[in-house]
Picture 1 (cartoon, rainbow, N blue to C red):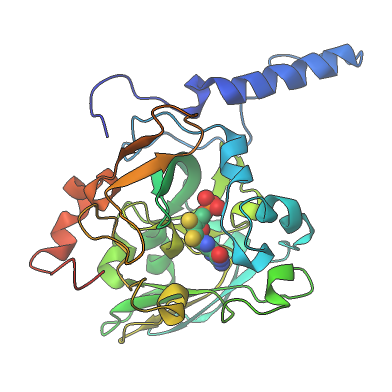
Picture 2: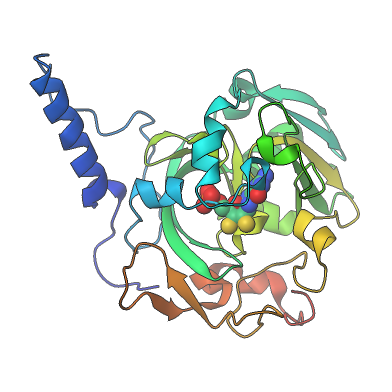
Length: 306
Ligand code: MTE
């Protein structure tokens, strides 16, 4: 991650601008008078000091190359099949060691939270990477709303189970619901967000709408999509990929070039959208967020706690 140079936001990036210009052009071509400049986005998220300087991938990379096994194994399946998912109404059941357990609907969850744009590096455990301009708010703000009780040490998350609308849940596959978990200090870290938008628009369904987790220093599988349940616990929760193959996927899943996956190296990563040449780059410890998060793991053996 470079720390020099201008801070880029999506507004500086051409792909979205091209898209908007094209939309404006098509509207004009259809003979509709334009009232004024085309709005740049609908969510109006504020910039954040936590955004990376790296240029975001175009929207089509982010929506068209995705992992969401509820919709299939193919990288294009989420975009192709998630369109029929009902995301309104939506609520998240919060339980365990909290002062105010219950069902929180989206409006309750978003109330009073200022939306921020967080341009984050995303690193999948499969050794590909991209840069994503999420829109969301810190998970800690929602945890404050529900009131974490002393004694809580972890947060467990679950994704929706709805085989009628999630074709990947009908056959053999993962053990549904998809589950993830964080240590409470990881969950409370300011980099950890609940995202509800992308490129200043509502989150596409294939990317986890209406609400997904984003933990940028960990492998992408920790960033669970379409969350319907959060439980505060005193014991380390299970997570789907560890349950599937514990030798290959751990609970921590911190991005680390020095700790290889048993079947492939994690030393470098393939940058999605970089083209044929120069498309591999070195993997960064904690995905480039070491300054902010290394302290969470002081004294821990990162090879053992993968
Ligand atoms: N969440 C659910 N519910 N199901 C999934 O299959 N895949 C994970 C994560 N969250 C997954 C999920 C993996 S492996 C990655 S790399 C990221 O989502 C990808 O997020 P993106 O498609 O928005 O880039």
